[in-house]
Image 1 (tube, helix red, strand yellow):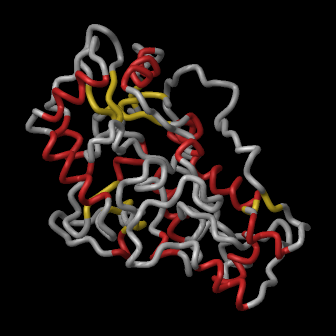
Image 2: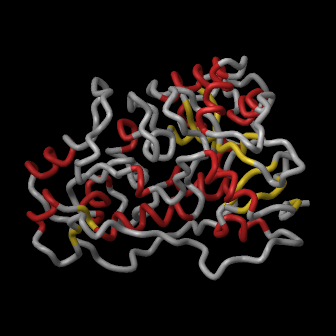
Length: 332
């Protein structure tokens, strides 16, 4: 993640792949790879050409790769419950030892809003940044101080939104007038049904209940037990938008990517399955009544460590940000 001063004057952290789309007049030295990811070798993957019936015990490797690619392009949020205190905050850290610490959003986060009010999460970050963050502080000291602060109830209230279905979305409708109520047509609805909050799944994916039966299924937190080709066939996107649905395309365009209007399937994927298999695949997606956290041992649920960005300790966050000292670049 690379810090830059964004168009609204806020400093945010951007993945290299997304930063390259902003066409900055000056930019930091880029690394050799835009996206680096790893896949769990203990997981059973299904590959195109394998027997379809084996999908009930495996995840389609192509599905997983395309999903993680979108994360690498910038579909990832800094808003998490880092310290397991039922409070959602952006990533805390420093740029240098002579500046005060603060909470930093990712580039993705400047488009996040509460529903239906339209209140931006960036405005909540501004409120949280009234909390003083010291450099020489331990995790426990941070937690103790934050719990006593006037900012804690703000983060606590946001946690309630983050575990309540239909309350947070990524705004894809530009130039909305102030005080305009936000509808689901204006946003990509994010995953806020998991209770307790599941780091790496909550907020970092689209709402499974809303998008399972739509062409915007790709970024659900759970992989259904059918192939990518089968999912596209079921929702009718095989020859229209492919695995990247219309709302996800708008989201990527909002982030800064140039998105092609036309889609030509590069290959023909397996798309045959029985009605029983279709119904069985739907059982892997939580219904409106299911609010419990999925088991970490379930193969079809993404584990926390599969996330491309996973900060667990304040110290590691500070070290990462310190490596970018004085590397703040303006978009202007």
